[in-house]
Amino acid sequence: MVSNIAKTANLASSVLKSSVAQSLKINHPLSQSVRSAGTAAGATTITVRDALNKAMEEELDRDPDVFLMGEEVAQYNGAYKISRGLLDKFGPHRIIDTPITEMGFTGLCVGAALSGLKPICEFMTINFAMQSIDQIINSAAKTFYMSGGKQPCNITFRGPNGAAAGVAAQHSQDYSAWYGSIPGMKVISPFSAEDYRGLIKAAIRDPNPVMFLENELLYGESFELSEEAASPDFVIPIGKAKIEREGTDVSVISHTRNLLFCLEAAKVVKEKYGVSVEVLNLRSIKPLDLDAIFATVKKTGHAITVEAGFPGFGVGSEICAQVMESEAFDYLDAPIERITGCEVPTPYAKSLEDFAFPDTPTVVRGIEKVLSLGEWA
Image (cartoon, rainbow, N blue to C red; front, top):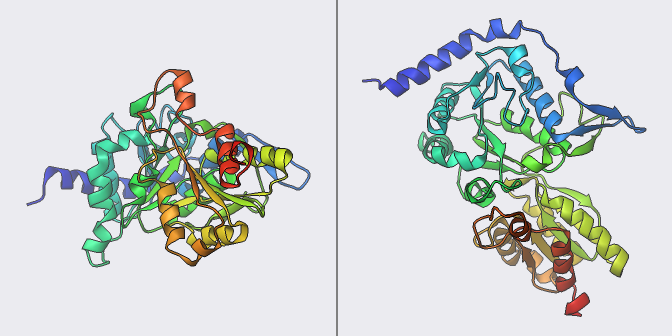
């Protein structure tokens, strides 16, 4: 006997597939809405928000099985305007507003993915995905294995992750390590506009469930986008890190917005001590690019990890364990230093909130400690 929930999922799948041809006839180009400026090298400057928006538009255009579902994604253009203009172009059958019920619409998205569609399931914040943890972990991440490899689940979960500004403990948690510990789930934590553009495309096309962890404070940040990255065919492979700054003395390994502080700290210690810092952008939490991590550790002999999550059982902890269990451990001249958020629910008061997360001076102190500089000399 088919349950009402199963009937609803099947109906949603049928409606979405039957409406594809009609919704694709609606023509409302978004290219004019993308705020970009040319550079001498033929590159453009674009915000993370616009990079995400344009990438999703291209993937919706490319594949009629792709659709976007979530709270306020359609008529309101997204809580953070990431889906701006998509409803006008693709219609309400592919850009779907939902009630405030994460458990409900996540279940619909997972069911649609199991039926062969490719949903983008947007959470207003990944904190709200805790309402959907059963669908994400037990239904999406485990079904391919439990079906003996017969039932894929091509779904992208996305939304802002970690702390923003003044949103307190229940809206500020970093879930990188949470989802990174789950077999069957890929986890992405991008930094630049190029990262967001290339990796959201990779996530949508990947046949596995992907947790795409964005950062609210990065949405308005502008980055240079190369001519290659602006191509509709540009995709960044999941699981490949990127060296954001070459160096020889110490490796700083981080992801998402923390890299802004790492790059600033690299300039500070270069001017103050003449230290050459290599900054590695993880991009992917699962799978980790262990080859890139081991290579930079072997190159510099010193390393620190930087993240905004809690200190216990975090991404930095995993990196330390992986290095210790590999041949890269023999190349270390000092213990790896971890820089993390504080062991406390995120405070609401700004002064305490600022104190709870890494910043540029914190990263500078970490570099000084691992190299025995400053007060550690």
